[in-house]
Amino acid sequence: MVKVFVNGFGTIGRRVAYAVANDKEFEFIGIAKYTPDDRLKEAYEQGYDVYIPEESIDRFREKGYGFVGTVKEAIEKADIIIDASSDGKGYENKIKYYLPLSKKAIFQGGEDRYGEKSVASIIHNSRVNYDKAITHDYVMQGSCNVTGLGRIMQPLIENYDDITRFDSIIIRRAADLEDPKEVKDTIELTREPHHQDDVRDFIKEPPLYVDAYKVPSRMMHMHQLNIRFKKKAPNKDEVIEIYKKEFGVAILNSAKGTADIRKKALEKRYPFGDTCMVHIHADVIRVQDDTLKIAYSDDQTGIVIPENHILLQGMVFKRSRDDAIRRTDILFGLNDRKRQLIEEYK
Ligand SMILES: NC(=O)c1ccc[n+]([C@@H]2O[C@H](COP(=O)([O-])OP(=O)(O)OC[C@H]3O[C@@H](n4cnc5c(N)ncnc54)[C@H](OP(=O)(O)O)[C@@H]3O)[C@@H](O)[C@H]2O)c1
Image 1 (cartoon, rainbow, N blue to C red):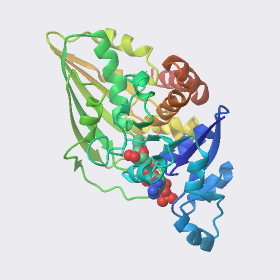
Image 2: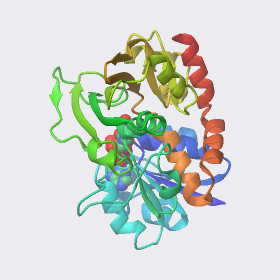
Image 3: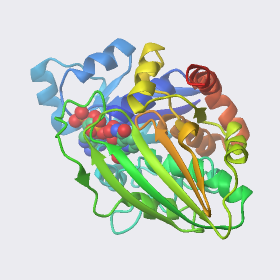
Image 4: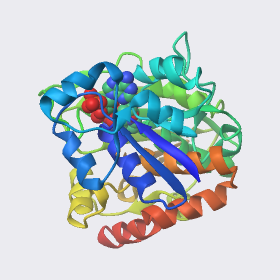
């Protein structure tokens, strides 16, 4: 059985660990924890084996937190690592462990794709470049916004050959729900949004231009994507029809905003309160001459988890994309969640 280790147990790591641990196809080695704190209780309750850095053994013992081995030992046992570390640490892990031990790895969207600390030569987006990504041993999974952009842009590109440009304004949440950090009352400017270059890694044309602002919210991201056509933009009903069959895209008509959807996901007890998808707010789609304007919200914490699972299957089993998505849907019940959300916000 293929052995998977999850390196990092924060917002993303705990979700990825839960998915892998519940997938009988994989042998789940366990998780890495770097700080001896109460987040470990969740790992123990779930029955995960905990691995820690060798240099932290005394600190964990002093605080009375149990572990079964070191991070290096876990990586030696694993066939593939899903790295869910804080931004930039994935690169250090690649140099320290994955390359010397010849282990495949998936990195998250906060790592660098370009420059001297680049973790991989490709960014995966399951809607765009799955077949190519799975041929690599080191792959970066696009961040939440980058994943959502691929999911919304690609169906339009496949249906229309007269798009001249995409302009995206991303209104980003300042922190995740479970993040203890303070959310400041400000609208913060993002000087060089990484999303533009990241998306260009898998969609070169038509060009995408991104502007991003961080707002004092913990409830998802909102995207305003404006799509310019050579002449007249297509009509709204035609566009909605295109998205209806897209995996991980729900078309909603009456959600007031992001908190509505997040609270609904919590109320419905979806694991971690995630919808794991993007939600097109169809009631505010606008067609104005040559421009189509789509607003959609993006479940920042959830959307990348099925993506990691799809990519994992591809990298280890070389499965077709359809097959990988089918199995991911069985594990996450995404089509069910989508149906429920559409019904709630029809
Ligand atoms: N949060 C989101 O909504 C979101 C969405 C998409 C993508 N991402 C990306 O996913 C990655 C993880 O983000 P996150 O939000 O999960 O961050 P996070 O909540 O801050 O968690 C990061 C985790 O990394 C662990 N860590 C520290 N040093 C490490 C090392 N050397 N190797 C491995 N792990 C280490 C930390 O462990 P300790 O707690 O034990 O110190 C912490 O649990 C980032 O690249 C981020 O950009 C995040």
